[in-house]
Image (cartoon, rainbow, N blue to C red; front, side, top):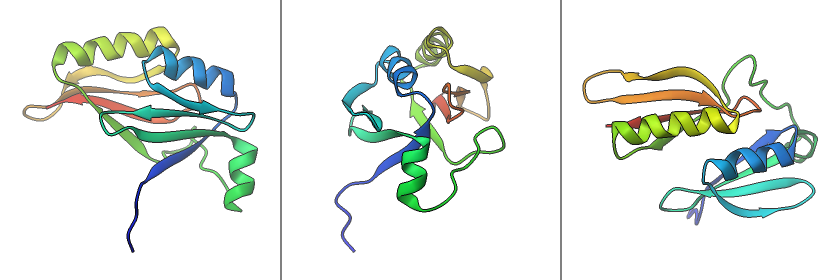
Length: 128
């Protein structure tokens, strides 16, 4: 099998809220429709589509994880310094994200924090 590209499909309740949140964090817009909002992330432009929950549920013919009960996936965003981690934390809070664990040292040479977006999708930002 020769996969050309991989991307993520997540669900949200409110496309406008999601668009505003990720735009405020500086993610690059990749289009929006009545069913989804999409962003490009990182140097390689990883694609994350945020679909309205009922649309993706119908498309995959199954249940969607309840982000209040557990994690579907945890995305990691790399930072170039501890200062950048701290800046990310402030930006996430200002944009309306929820800080799960504040920036801290965890393990030798690792510094970071964990947050969720307004729909409960979990990310961590770390410097190593």
